[in-house]
Length: 68
Picture 1 (cartoon, rainbow, N blue to C red):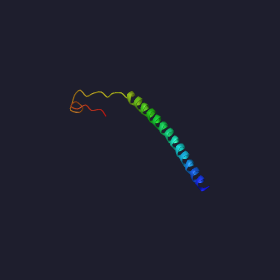
Picture 2 (cartoon, one colour):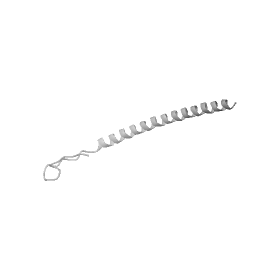
Picture 3 (tube, helix red, strand yellow):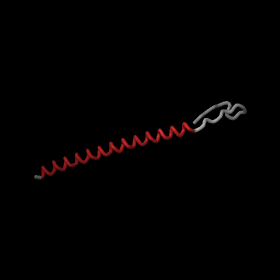
Picture 4 (cartoon, rainbow, N blue to C red):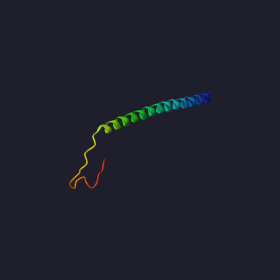
């Protein structure tokens, strides 16, 4: 009888771990989708920013042109 309880406990633990794994996979999928949506929103926002005018005279901004 005690071996049946041990087997049942082991089966229950395996099933619980499978449920946890399934939940974790679903959470990671949602997390990735959320990150993708955030990245797309950030890219769209960046694209709406106007490009700064380049300097044409003087020493500031005429020797090195760097965008962050």
